[in-house]
Image (cartoon, rainbow, N blue to C red):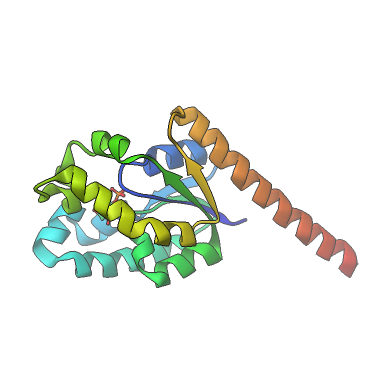
Length: 186
Ligand code: S3P
């Protein structure tokens, strides 16, 4: 069974939706930022401030590698995970990758307590920063995703339902495929 992986910009609801999906599926929920923080014994914001973004990205890849291999689970990732092809390759190989999309206005509102989001904390104009980062990352998000859920106008429950539908269809397909292989072999 493949992992269910949620990717997307900060504030698109990956952790909340991921936790709910995991509960429904009876799978474990893991968050790559949480594993990075646990290993480093400091927050993501402190890692950025004290060690720099490159150090964070290296720790993030290590966390992705560990978690991707512990499946089946639901994995919520940091918003910048798609910046490294290595992460994308691991996630796509081991999981079904769903991109959660939200508009810049929603993202800004959801990330308004920005101290835990180092990429937005120092920005003179956070709105502009969000728009710029979204634009820069859009293609990478789309390339990394097997499926996309636009969360605009949807309740959290509706987002969860869409993600689970997509994941369910893929799991069904692949179990059908292995049934065929099984029956063919016997
Ligand atoms: C980041 C997003 C954050 C965290 C780090 C970098 C990014 O995760 O990994 O601050 O580059 O977009 P969330 O998307 O969970 O906020």
